[in-house]
Length: 299
Image (cartoon, rainbow, N blue to C red):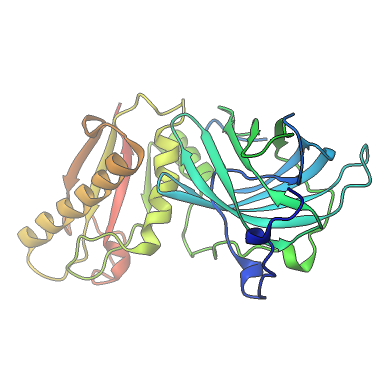
């Protein structure tokens, strides 16, 4: 089992920046035998720690680039731990799935970006704890591997050039899960940048990432029992009644995304349309920023 021709293709330079998903996969030698965060399950970014396979205790930096109920992407970068200094360095892409309600994250090994001789990818099946500070579980998919245990701390091993990952570009006004939770706790509301095209109620791709963060927050222990208002707004172009109906359709689009993608009960989400009555930018009534959905704690 030391040769794995299906995994042995040399990656191109373009492949080296591939993003990965949420079903952790490990590197183990072929022939192995079986062996600070907030009150929400935040999974994006770096997880650092160790795992155990036939080569012994091994250091790991797992970078999660995307994590939604529809899928996830990540980079698996392994290296020597001081207690086991003979382990080589390697990395590969991953994809998988994530359940934000339970915190379960599963990752499958993808393509090698830097492969030591005789190694092959394996998989992880674990959970992010309720505080979002620890990700641990079982190594699966091959014999000889046991547990992994990762936390939020700086990586001790700089990644080789082949093991870099392209993270999502930060968008102006994009609020992360921590910011959403803090704003709701402090003010009881937040005006998210869930933007819409003129006259449309269809969600844009640049708004769904914001909704993925909102979905994780609404499933966190602090808010899991709260009712939430989804209040739609438009700009001031067009008739008042048409804008009110349009703003309600926009709020319903957000509700449907949260219900379908995160399993949030529709009864928790109160949909309203305010049309052009509450402009975000009164001095610029036709500005696209007025086309938005406001999130409000109701009780």
